[in-house]
Image (tube, rainbow over all chains, first blue to last red; front, side, top):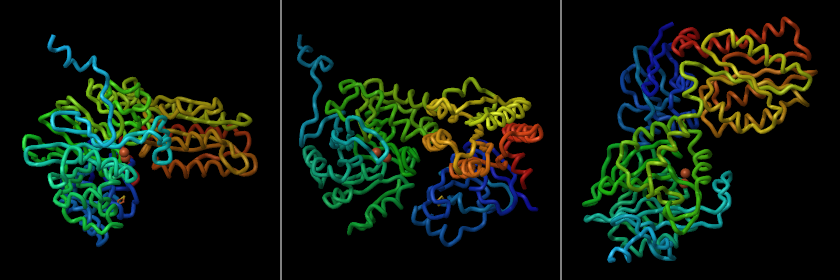
Length: 95
Length: 431
Ligand code: FES
Ligand SMILES: [Fe+2]
Ligand SMILES: [Fe+2]
């Protein structure tokens, strides 16, 4: 199965995950400070800054895009409950 | 001789007067509202002598900024105080450090009274801002989103913004005036305490309120508190002006140090390099207790894990909450009584939302007579609190056999091993 690497910069932990993993599936397990609200891509609580490897995340859905717009999220920001890691190396931290 | 009439420390404390602002620094006034009769805040917080909603006005050479407003019911009081120090057409900026209704209640009306004013919000706040205005006919167009590093020059007075998310909502921020060493800290360093002498060196003893407020509002966001302190500690501070309770002018640093102590966690220093696993149980006839002891024995076999065993029958669960806050894993055991876990177990589980437990390791176990629902119920609660529950709980009928106790030991061993395995390896193993 294809793998990818995710680094949670706030706690300095890197882990290998299967392709398609959403950040939400691993961030709480390792104790990263990304905080969740609705967990369904609606509230924007889980806003996360992608420090590197944004191209290795699946494109945002229409809903995620809309929420990011509503929040005026700067470039390079994603919702951790939505963003899926595809391959390569991705570095994130709570926004 | 001539200093005698001026000497502030011996003077009786100035009291907040109706309709009058109170100066807290050069060109800065408190224009908030007192709510001495409030006894419960946000449904759950006891407020023994009420609270205050603190709003402030900062005057620069090029205009005036209003920092936060008050709860809607107190708007008339707030506007009277505001009018005692500025005209609405002088207001250039309205800064909201936090959009919860206790601070944003008078915002829509202020925006109408001061149409020239521009609103400054944290970049995490716009969705809440829109939600706040949706019932009004104000179009939330004129607002600027700020983040750590953003500054606003009022002429001789600068507002520098520091994002402190989750203290107490995602949108929370602090606003700092470098020329005065003055921090408008929002809910941070605040407390529910109402005293019209306003300053920390004049009001009654409010230490319990400060601690209580931390415990209920800030404590669940311990990691965010530590991040915020990293951001705020380097600032020169002569005055902290929070959104509730006394203005902190005497030894303001004390309050940062206290937050640091509270957030650091009491056991951390003693536990360097060691993982902690706490096992809690209740036992009716001794079977669940035997299981707990076997789990402990299994876990202790792993080096690098300190295992503690506690009987919940002693009653008060609050000391355990302190322990759990800094533990790496918790295991909870209860017999099934009438299809449910025992009450002290629920008391423990019900209190866990007051601390940060997300991502900790969790597991449940218990013995039962003829139906064994308690284990699944405890597991559901642990999962609902976002603990990581990788191993299925153990339910055993009546008195455990040798073989069943070996299963308990095995569960303990797996839990302890999980704690000492780096997260990267665990995820790779699961992949
Ligand atoms: S948690 Fe609500 S959008 Fe991600
Ligand atoms: Fe609040
Ligand atoms: Fe508040």
